[in-house]
Amino acid sequence: MEKSHKIIYGIYILIWIIMAINPKYPEDWLLENILVFLFFPFVLWLDIKYKYTLLSIIFLLIFASLHSLGSHFTYAQMEYFNFITQLFGFERNHFDRVVHFLFGLLVFRSLFEIIVVYSNSLKSALFFTFSMIVCIATIYELLEWLAVVTFYPELGMAFLGTQGDIWDAHKDTLLACIGAFINIMFYRSYKKLWSLKR
Image 1 (cartoon, rainbow, N blue to C red):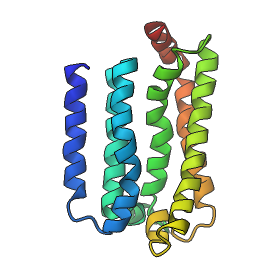
Image 2 (cartoon, rainbow, N blue to C red; image 1 turned 30 degrees about the vertical axis):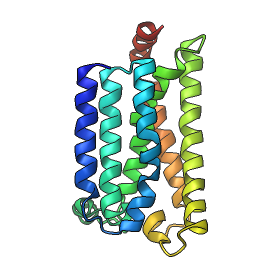
Image 3 (cartoon, rainbow, N blue to C red; image 1 turned 45 degrees about the vertical axis):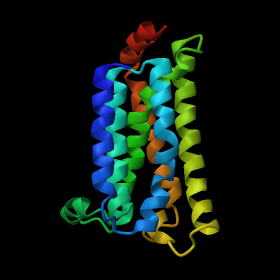
Image 4 (cartoon, rainbow, N blue to C red; image 1 turned 30 degrees about the horizontal axis):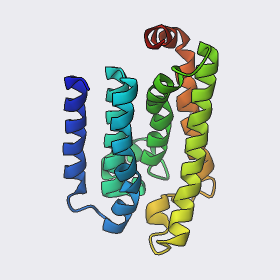
């Protein structure tokens, strides 16, 4: 693994530790971080196996850091986003929506760098990566709901962060899809990455 990647992982661990100190809702924080405990070692393994580009690692750092921030305050009550909420007169805190959008936008590249190894064409790699983002975003919403209903019903809206919107899960998934689709618009950039990874 390259030294620059180790530095970025170290930065993320530091951010995660800071955000783990005195979270607003400890049980919600724990539930939000179950996937982190599972996937962080997996991402390290993927990086070693597929040799992620530095830009992919930076994108993952940004997304994971924002998730840590959301876990600390809860997505629905992320205090640093209140200024934007008040500035534009929003009726809800849209931090969760931004993070779902950034999931599609930022995680797309790291998935593409794996899929491209097994794809026969650039178009099929882009399509399958987009499909993976849609699938992951949808499954996450289902798992999120199932975890609360089954194990932590008392957390309710603190974890789900619907803020009274019955279409919250649908909108979150749509935003992840939009973020992923933006990547496809940069076709030429991915064409260069295709050549690099083949």
